[in-house]
Image 1 (cartoon, rainbow, N blue to C red):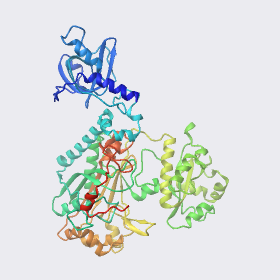
Image 2 (image 1 turned 90 degrees about the vertical axis):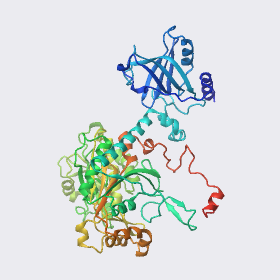
Image 3 (image 1 turned 30 degrees about the vertical axis):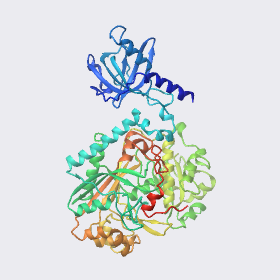
Image 4 (image 1 turned 120 degrees about the vertical axis):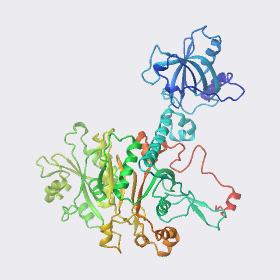
Length: 630
């Protein structure tokens, strides 16, 4: 292409100044560290040319390294004996050439308030071109150039050229923020709470619970034997507590073979923590300190964090990770509507595990942002959000009349609810003029749909303060949730979570209705971590396995080593984990965790840079006793 040949021509113009020998120069100063106090200093800089400008015979360039950029400029004619050579090199420089510059810092005449080095520049005494760009750049690295900026390129192009993408200041800043967060996590755990970092195996055995395992065929074992990459270090960290390690942590790599999305990767990083001889409050205190220091919010968010039970979160917000930066609450109306004749609601309430809920949206003072009927009718964005979340009938809507006692809206709905209108308004505490949004159906679907609708309404009404920090614990999760498709109970968190003591005491032989001593940490509507107190006795653990339909033989085969460890005096213990990728994504304001991971995978699990996964040869597969089936 013409742009490619142009770039290569420009690269060749600069290439004449590159030495035929490799060199490894050193620097005295980082580009981004220079300021007005540096004036008069002689400095050596190394970095990339961010951009170059020729202003009527005087050449300027910005040189960039990981710390920032600074302007360099040729000296006035005759100052240096080699000035003509310097000017020739400066004139030939193109974006992303690698250079070493030696010069004196001086105050700029035309200061640039947009960059931290904008008061100074470096007058070049010598310049060495270390390397050039010999291929056309797929996008601009410089953040000062609008055209060809990487943000306008497709993510596929960025991931394929990840080496260049990471060179961009914004991406380097994300990686620096990630490093700082992990550094602070380690500092808090070690210096404040005396934790010990311990590595656990990456090659372990497959387990039947949770997401699909990544399997690694074991060449030296019997045919068909496989290791599994860890979904978390859960069992190993519990056994470390049995070992007496007392306080363990690890910045752990975890692997799950599941469907991907913007905030999920096949391999991810979590801060993994376990501790003995403490209660839930003690564990949550450690987690709060870690979060506050890692996020830098210790002056903005107070301890202890707000707590809300799972039951309250689901009732009021339809989600176990509610975003509390804005209000908007929902209410279950099953009791109020038990005698309703309105067909969609009547039908829903005659079905098991079903509900009718209402979301109250007081937009009476919203002016031009008031939610229009067009958004709520079929094909409207709010209606369609409910449908996409599983609600076959979308949303039903009406408004509270100014008398505060009756409803206004579609005739069928208003007449169908007329007898219980006052009760609906009272129970949902809906003020006059407010919008009522109803969803009916299976309770799980109703909650999911109204949660989606709640967020859409908040967006339309501009209720979300981008500077707000809403942090809370959601507690008292159910031990189990019922899988409608498989008609069986599954562990809500994982099967090693301890049951609530009161619930266990009431019915120790049937834990299917018990609550768990589990807690999730939620930040601005995103679950960033969670944990629980653990079972530490074999008899209780076996009851949990029984509740999820696991036979004694299967439990012994899969988890015999853990059950045996419990028989050697296991201490009471518990822990938590924080998702590093997800937390850093939120702290950086990134749209995807792929923007805070150095070399991420796509939503199809591929690395576009290295073209992984790759195809194994027939010989490699034969060594593993694997045969390809076409």
